[in-house]
Length: 325
Image (cartoon, rainbow, N blue to C red; front, side, top):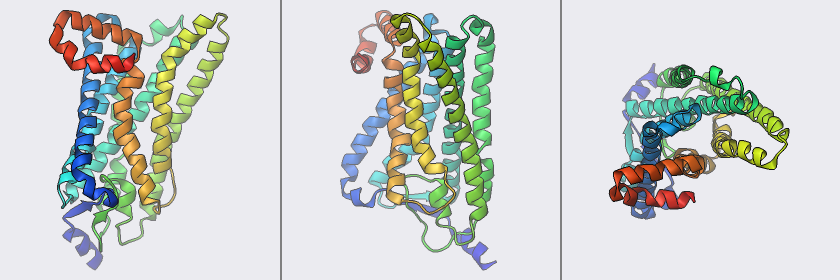
């Protein structure tokens, strides 16, 4: 009973971040702010372009726009708080706010896993079953898949959040991480967390390993189909629609596998924070470039929009076009 009273007294946590880099706070703030602005701008541009251009009204580009929409909120969950912590020496976050940040971060992360799987399935149907593709991947089907991705994603972390909200916390309230997350929170609990660790392991393993395996199986069959194409130009054209998606998948899943698929709450604090920077900051800003803005059809759509909207928009998005060339 005494331990439970201690947990009630904990009203906030302190996000430690990278202590050795505290003296570079203002400089890191500027860098992270620029990254965040570019991330939001790039994903908003992709989302708007796909929504406005009729030539991009296909399942593949629909999923790309949904991915961009997801990335906007995925970064909004963590980066604004990171920015404030770089200038605020207190770096505190309320107990309930910490749980909410953890929930939404994992909900959107799980939704991205499912969405990347749906995108792999779309490419599999388009390349391996081209004759049946129009009848199978209809507009209604794409909407249903997108809704299912978000629904499953937001249901997955509920059990983990409920379990961790019941834990007693004592001693230090310093979270050795750049944002609230399950592993660093569990390390602060002053009771046995084996149930929490097992729940995290099985839930994360189910989401990450299942979706990643499905994606890899889809691409294995896609590669076999592509190799059977007689002309080299046909093979290049078929694979070009998949290589960017595969790059995003490998970058994203490699990091989260090392972070969340493990049966222990002991971990390397420094390397976990580095991985967190990759999948929470770098991956979202790279997605618009390696996945969309280097895509010829989207670049043409951007140019068509420039012709309609004029010089003002061209000045705003010209750096994105130049980067994609």
